[in-house]
Length: 203
Image 1 (cartoon, rainbow, N blue to C red):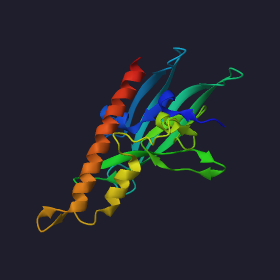
Image 2 (cartoon, rainbow, N blue to C red; image 1 turned 60 degrees about the vertical axis):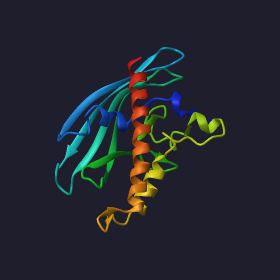
Image 3 (cartoon, one colour; image 1 turned 90 degrees about the vertical axis):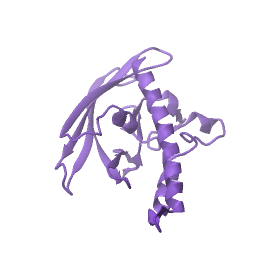
């Protein structure tokens, strides 16, 4: 199966949700919607989303998103109402607060994915990570390796896992400073990408 290009696919970004306050407040339910316009045909597709936060403030807190949309079969034209639950994972930040990620809800060859990602892509009928959706970035087709702001998610996680302590003798440790540098470069890249998604969604 030919791989699709991420930049030409429907993308739902956790960073876009954060930018517009869907993940930044104490809530039990938040809702919204997003619309994409296809570059070539001008056709529009949209989804509604609902952010749930059960057992808020407890160790059993459960955060997830429900996506609701209508899927039209490409060949038959048949329309189906889809409701897809997407769990959210969270990582704790050193200076307090948490950072949320999507957990891919799809199964591939009968095995649940659950991969932690910042962006979900339309796979046809459902939304999942780019691995399950068989999606590559444009730069990969050009022989390069795509990195947002020259940094990818695994770079941030790798730098984070190397940090054993934040301060030593009253000064930030070298590995902690390296982590901050990588994280800041990543955040700048994701903000740029979120702005791009916002621009494309409004077209």
